[in-house]
Image (cartoon, rainbow, N blue to C red; front, side, top):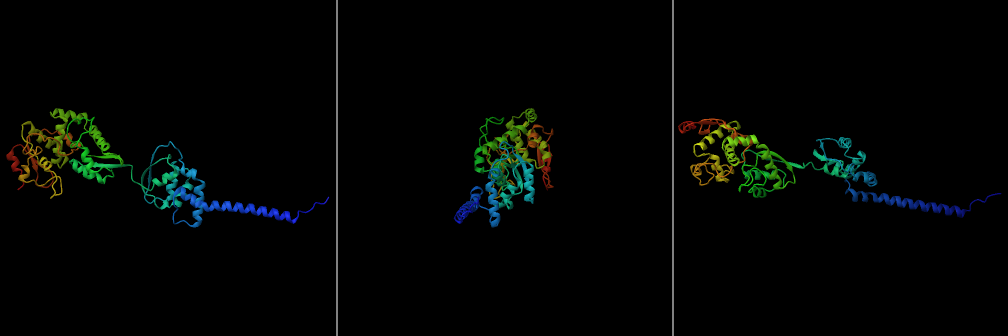
Length: 379
């Protein structure tokens, strides 16, 4: 039996249906492709202005279709690890090391993200703390800022608390000098030097402190206080007892030793002189106590007036050991551990006087009698 060939109208209808489906597919796919850059921008921000049209569409497609791998962490419970981006390191080397250390899921996708955003030219060399608990996007953003999470606060030996306060704006902390000075007027509770109605002057132990950038003034002072307790050991405290000194008296004396001794190895001998004077009821008569009493010298732009005049030596203050007997009422600086040890374990000497040598070395000549002391004066 002969079959009849399809009529022309049927073929026409079939072709029309096929064309309609094709148009619909092209429309839908085309619309999706057109929308990709907009979707990528909503997810990752504006693209780099350096991308060509071809790159824009290709990278947008990659990032949109792979967003789960790019925006989800590799290991949500992973710990932080140290990561250093070396100066001049290539993007390829960086990505390889991130992958080797298990920090990113897909090296190629991470590269696409960097190129799309333009971050491949903005990464900063430095030390970072990264984690596989961070998404690839978060890791890339972190690598734009090498600012460390911790900062260093350096307290130099012999500084008074105002000088410590003045140094804070350069540390990266948000603590203002005024805030610091208000806080140190009261000693924190729970430490061996607590309980005194005095400031923390003398107990701001010279040291290089590592503290979180977001640390409050009270967290900073707690760190300093803990360090003081650790560094001023039971052995040192036992030395204070042998000298007949309380902790407070020892720190006051150490604060004077710190300012008097330019050369650290002279600290035990200078401590000996001061202890000898105390033992016979002689006034200490030390210049740094006068300098502390005078306060800031605007003409010299310093907290430590030098030289001192005869009028300065007569300045009426309980801190001025030329006019007041015994120890001043509080420390006049923040002494180092070596100055504190010098008071705990002073040299045994017969000296009651010392004065600076004439060779500008910072060393001192020591004397038993006042006449010998006068003879040590520079010509």
